[in-house]
Every structure is written in structure tokens, then in C-alpha cells.
Amino acid sequence: MSWGIRGKIFGLSALLVLGAVAVSGAYLELELRGWTRGRIEAELRSHAEAAAVMVGRLGAADPASLDGLADALATPAAARVTMILDDGTVVGDSEFALAELDDLAGHEGRPEVIAARAGGVGVAERDSASVGTPMLYVAVPFAVVGASGTLRVARPLREVEEAVARLRVALGVAGLIGLLGALLMSAAASHLLSRTLRSLVRDARRVADGGGAHYKIEVVAQDELGGLAGSINRLADELEATVAALAVERSRFEAVLESMDEAVIAVDQAQRLTLINRAALALLSLTVERSGETVGERIRVPALQELVEAALAGTPERREFTVPEPTPRRIMAYASPLRGASGAVVVMHDVTEIRRLETIRRDFVANVSHELRTPVSIIRANAETLLDGALERPEIARRFLEAMLRNADRLAALVGDLLEISRIESGSYELKLDTVALAPIVARIVDSVESLADERSIEVIDSIGPEVRVWADAAALEHVLLNLVDNAVKYTQEGGRIEVVSRVEEDGAVRIEVRDNGPGIAPKHRDRVFERFYRVDPGRSREVGGTGLGLAIVKHLVEAMDGRVGVDAVTPRGSAFWLLLPRSG
Image 1 (cartoon, rainbow, N blue to C red):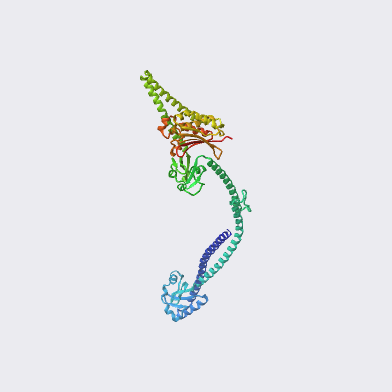
Image 2: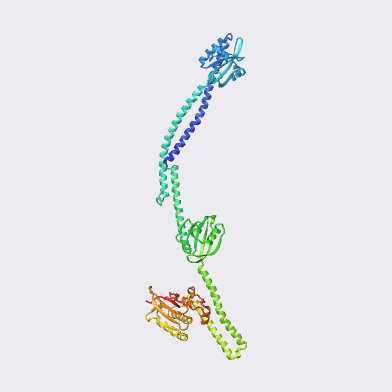
């Protein structure tokens, strides 16, 4: 920080000094060149005019006299004096001897000579062809007895260059002094400024790093830096208030999101997951949230990915699909794009149970219709037959009336079972849970099925001990066991064996089993035998009678008593229908 400030101050000062030196040096050099040249030109002109006057006082144009006069005039003027006749003949030159003047022909074409003849004074700055150095020439006309010409005075321009060179040296020294001053100034300024800025930056970092909820930067001056410190303090206050408000809103949003039963996921434009709530983790059987993954990488459900792609394209869409693993679930999802096309959000509902209930309802309606159609058809057909004349034949009429009575009883039993299962499901079936001795109930049931079992030579064994007691409703428990034993008698072949047994499980529950050695139930049917109207062997079920609701009633009654019910296979053959009930204390 300090080196940066010092470097910037020094660089700026150096640039300012160098710029000032460069501009002033260029200006001074230009002015010095002009002033020096003007001064030299004025001196040369004065010498030239004075020399012309002196030449005019000579009596005759004697070359030797003129050349000697040129030499004499050149010494006090520190200049070169040349006398040129109108025909271009050089009759005198301070730089050359008299014998060498013949080699200096052709001076009538010099610019200063032409200008002097035309206007009285000629000035030119050029390289001398005879001497070979840059010179300033000033020429004026002169006249002697018998001749006229031009008198030219010249001086080398190295004086100008020497003056400029001295000026450049002076400017260089001034520049170095200026740079040194800039360095000293930058060091002093940066020391003062950087100390204040370091303190300001340190305090600002402390505020940014959370060095205290109410930490303030100390305002040590009322200048611009003090104003900056005050602005940072106000910014910190506003930032703290904004962060607090955002934290409250985020907490509120997360609380609402996590309390929702609906599963919610959000993705950005690259399909990366940016949000996933607890309900979504549970619904999709995911582990903890991991950011940065895409929908396709984390949730391998093609239908969901297609839904997200449609939403990211700007089209809200609703779709229902199945998540196969680990537990198949039916999901209704709605995806919509976020504002500004920065992503999409998907809300999902688990409709597995709803679809299952809809399927049960459809099957229930179809089964009830089927179960009702047969007895109603029989009753209608018998009634029509009786009306058509069979009523006049007593031996036939009685048979038809008995059939009508049996089917009416079947309808009454079906309606009764439907009403009973409806009461159980709606919670209006009142259970009076209490300590119930199991042995008397089983004994009554065995007595009630004894005549039917004897007709088919089926042995029914009661293995329930007198000490077995359960926490249940006595009437409901007797209904359940009677249904199970009655079914076992109906479906066991002649000469079979049925046994009612019980045992206490490790968790304290009492397990009651109705075991038979009948044909058994295939594994694919065991999970569905407790559904309404589900029949393992429809033909056999019609033969033995029944409404198809008995086992469904058993399941609902046992669950209403906080128990469980199921069926297992018996080796080598047969089935064991069991129920678990709480043991009485």
C-alpha cells in the first residue's frame, strides 16, 4: 500500500517536473536561438554599414588596399569581411590572402549579395562554400571611385549552438534538481498520506472481516480522508443492516422451504442444482445436498431432466413420471422458469398413494359391480321365470324361490361386509380394547365350525393355552379368528388338518397363527390376499362362497387394534395366516 502510494506520487511528480523542464527547455531554446541570432545579425549589420562607409572614403578601388581594409575591419568585429564587385569579383576577404582571391570568383549569385543589391541589406544563413561551416551573412552595397559592389560581413553560428548547449546543460541540472525535489516531496507526502491511508485500510479491513458488529473507523480529520472514513462507516452500517435483513429473510425462506411437504429443487441456466429441500431429498432418495452437480448427474430420471430443459427454454410444463429406484414412486412435477431466465424451479408432489387409491377405487367399483351382477341377475331371471308360469308349478317354484333367497342372502352379506369395512375405515367402528383371554374365543370358534369340518373330515386342533391374554377388542378378535378359521376349513381339502397356535415374540407381542395343510398360496399372491375382492382362485372362491371382503375386514380390524396381519407358507404344504397383537400386561 505505502510503496504504491509513494510510487504514484513520485511518478506523478517526476512526470510533472520532466514535462515542465521539457516544455520550458524547448521554449527557452527557441527564444535563445532567436535572440542570439538577432543580436549577431544586428552587430554584423552595424559593422557592415560602418565598413561600407570607410570603403567609400578610399580614393580608388585598389585591390591591395581593399583586401587590407577587409583584414583590418574583420579583427575588431571578430567576423569575416568580404568585398565583392558588381561583376562578382572578390577584391578583398579577411579569410584569404590577396593571391588567393582569384579562386573566389562567382560570388554575385550569393543570396545575401542579390538581396543587398535589390534592397540595400541582404541577410542569409547558410553553409559557407569556401570555409565549410554554417555562417550568418549580412551584406550592404558600397561604392568607390571607379567601382561599386557589395560588402559582406559573416560570423560562424557556433556561438548560437554553444549558447544552446549551455542552456541544455542548465536545463538538465534544473531537471535533476526538480526530480530530487519531487522525490523529497513525494517521500514527505507519501509518508503523511500513506500513514493515514494504512490506518484507514486497516480499519476498513477490520470492518469487512467482521471485527465487531458495531466497530467504527476513527475519523481523525475533516478533510477528504475524513469524509472517506465517514462514508465507509455509513456504508458499514447500511451493509450490516442489509446483511441482517437478508439473514432474516433467508432463515424465513429456509424455514418455509424445509417445512413444505412438496419437494422443491432449483437449477441455474447450466442445469446445476442450486437448491434442494429436505422433502426433495427424501422423495428422490438422495443423500445430503451437494452443490455444483447437474440434474442429470444427481437425479437420473430422464423425464425430470426433460421437464427442466423445457422450463429453461421458457416454457412452464407439468408432467407425471415414475422414479423407479430404490422404491418406485409416482411423482407429479411442475417446472417453471425463474425471472430473468436465470434458471428454473421444480415443485414435485408424491402422488403414489393417490394413484394407488385411485386404482383401488376403480378395482373396487369393478369388483362390486361384478359381485352384485351375478346374484341380481339370478334373482331377476328366477323372478321372470316365476312370472312366466313357473309360479303355478309348486315343485319348480320352490326351487326358484330358494335360489332367490340364497342370492338375496349373498347380497345382504356383501352389503353388510361393505358397510362394516366402511365403518372401520371411517373410524366409526367402536373398539373397546381390554385384556382378552384368547382360549375361550378360540374354543367357541372351533365349536362353530365343527359341523362343517366333520362333513369334510377336517381335523381342527385348538392349541391355545389358558394363560394367553392379549390387548384387544373381544368381538373384533372373535370376528377375525372366525374368518381365518372358516376360510381354512373352506379351502383345505378333505382329510386335512387345521391348527390354531400362539406364541410370545421377543418384543412381547402375541403371535396367533391359523395353520393348515391345504393347497397353499403362491408367493405372488401373498401380498395381495388382503385386498378387497382379490381371489387367488376365482373358480374355487365362487364354489365355496364368500363376498371376497373377509380378509380385507380382517386386516382393517387387526390394524385398528394396533396389530399386524400376514400370511406365510408352511412346509411341506399349506398356509399360516398370522396376526400380532399387543400382549396384555
